[in-house]
Picture 1 (cartoon, rainbow, N blue to C red):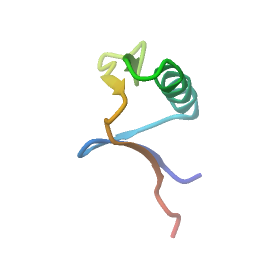
Picture 2: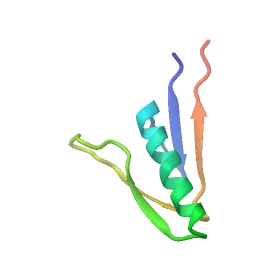
Picture 3: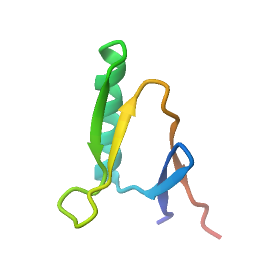
Picture 4: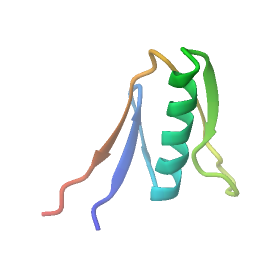
Length: 68
């Protein structure tokens, strides 16, 4: 299975399917309210939870690393 990454600004983070589902819900919430923001804990229940601010105008993409 290929690795998937969340590109947030100029940073890249490994993202799981569960984290991607939380990201989708956060994006939907932010954009359905006409802006605003929401914090996303990318790795909850770990020593490095990695909180990201989800807001309109912040560049976010999910990338898949190709299998060779």
